[in-house]
Length: 306
Ligand code: FAD
Image (cartoon, rainbow, N blue to C red):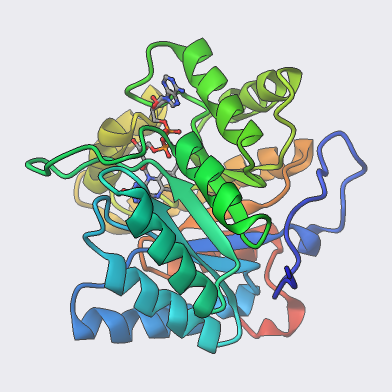
């Protein structure tokens, strides 16, 4: 009942002999466009990114179902292009009946992976619904659909911003894994020590699923600082001050960002990670440039990304 379109990163490479550079699985994340022009632009971006042979593409979901149709449309398009695709799916504000209906639709559309999240309610949104945490959603998906779906969940090496403390957040993550998650995707970070400590501590508590680092290319300082403040990702002072020093000089920001993020990926790869998950922000060039520097671009892709 569970044939896979593409292989999943179930093999932990950490502490193992380094595999060949081109074998590190890569996945890419998009958000659903709001306009017809955005849909066309994203289709072109995907075609460019297929050159790095992503394991799958994921598509974000507005909590409360605000992007439901756009998410599904983008997922359908990706599947029709022959690439595996995973809708993000958040449970906050949802009823069990609505989640059940959506899972049935995912199955009918041939979807086999879900990124299962709690999400954040948009301000002004009504009730909390029948799910409190992502772990409730994971358990419900397993109860309703067995092992049909590969379930990916979020992990926060620098702690979820609403958590009481890092220990409570780690325990919440372990609960989510034990509810039936297969893989974790992290919030982005720029400090690899936070990631490795998180993985060690989670493993010590019995949560041994692959934890794929989320990678945010740096292309725009104000956007990066805004997002990071909102999601609790730390931008180290040395990166922040360098970015501020560049002012509006986009070329310098992008060159510096490419160096910093490529070095981070190198560090992660050298110690061993099960893959890299790129937050593309619906842009191809920054991810292609990083992958080209990392030697993750297949030789026959004919790319010159930079
Ligand atoms: P949870 O795992 O439920 O955790 C939420 C908070 O509750 C944490 O502070 C946790 O410590 C606490 N908690 C959990 N379980 C318990 C418990 N049993 N007891 C006490 N406390 C508990 N948002 C979107 O709206 N759409 C998206 O598409 C989307 N995609 C994302 C993709 C990734 C890879 C990541 C890392 C985040 C994404 N987000 C997305 C953001 C995410 O929805 C928010 O960070 C949200 O606030 C938490 O979702 P979660 O699934 O991590 O929640």
